[in-house]
Length: 170
Image 1 (spheres, rainbow, N blue to C red):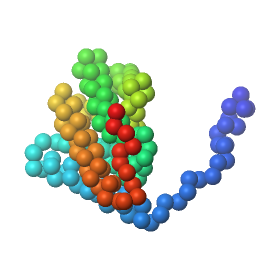
Image 2: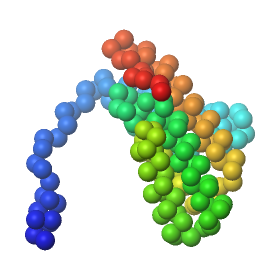
Image 3: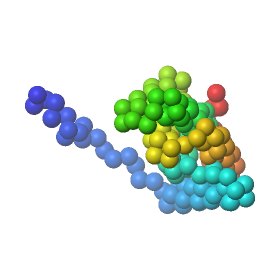
């Protein structure tokens, strides 16, 4: 039992290297452009395209664009599948604590099995339950919003001659 708690001390690994001021500013501008674009398009379309988990998606897209979690496949399909699973559990199983738990656990498992893991998308089933979302949530804000983020990332990240995005599509 004591060995279990000893693990809580950590492995004593070094912190990741500090980011350069240039990369921090680049990520700041990218996040600003991406979320602002989604918000402006929400106003123009008069239809919700902003999803709470998109803020965390921007952290990955613009702070860590080489991460597997940041690739278009993961961003788009991770959000889509997680929202679909949340909606399915909410509408067919019901709004119960255990249904929410099963929806989240299923979303995690499905993203792992399909190799579409996008950690911010893990919050989508929770958002679905909290909002009492309808099936239209799958299209807007989920799918269209995620696509907008990826399109902004494609154009913005590739402005930097030293960066290349994406690493892969499918």
